[in-house]
Amino acid sequence: MGPALVNPAAPAVRLYQASPQDRDRVIEKMPPGQQVRIRKQLEYYDNLPPGQKAIMLQRVQRFDALTPEKRRGFAQQLRTMNELPQDRRQAVARALRRLGVMPEAQRVIVLNSDAFKNEFSPEEQKIISGLSEVMVPDGQ
Amino acid sequence: MKCPIEAREDGQLLGYCDGSLSAERKAAVAAHLQGCAPCQEFVARQSMVWEAMDGWEAPPVSLGFDRRLYQRIEQEVSWWDLLVRPFRPLLTRRSVPIAATSLLVLVAGLMFQNPMPVTPVKPPASAQVDGMPPEQLEHVVDEMELMREFNRLVRVDATDPKM
Image (cartoon, rainbow over all chains, first blue to last red; front, top):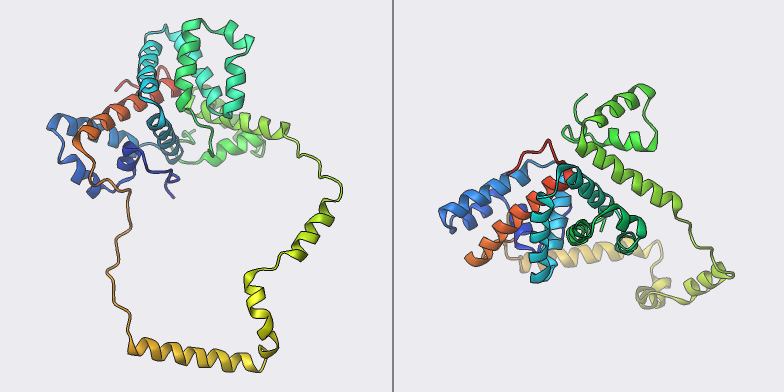
């Protein structure tokens, strides 16, 4: 059985879940450069294990529901995270994974806790807070 | 040991988390976990779920809950019950087969006179993607690349190659 079908409102989600024929119909209308890019992304998705596919769909759906400002913020935080030293990047990734399994209310409590503020610099806190917007606990 | 996530055998990791694996399997999974970040993530997520479930307590049932529940069940009669109630005496054992046969004959007759139009069967639908405007598609590619990069950063730092 494939991943659970989430609300297919997000265009990316619809493309991920479309049949190869449907995808081709859409992709053929795109400029050649974009065709290569999108095929690469679809291939990546197709090769994910089912559980990871479901997570990917949920994250894309969440991302798509963000305001344009928050989306820009997300992209910016991702770039900033990429520029962190490896050990800090790993620490931030770990925090994101932990936050990813928490319900929204608990996530807010953790993000505002002293322990969290002592562990991460203000910049890292901003990264974690921004990027955790698309993390969805399983089953939501 | 083959990676349970790659082999699509999440059950091993679930068994590891709930302690149902044999000592031998448990040791094998533990050794695999040392070097596999996706499995570590999976186990961490499962452990969080177990902890959360362990910490959850069902709220106590209020006094008189059962009495109020049964009263409500007594009061709420479905529309079907209301409709059928007057005809109950007619629906005896003897009349049911006769009524069913008559109904069958009636339906068959109607279908014979007015055959239903044959509609072509639609192929199983994949998600609807027709009519996506090109400018939207450009955003879609950006979004996919962004989320893939996010996945890469969150899942593993060293082993997953960059795009």
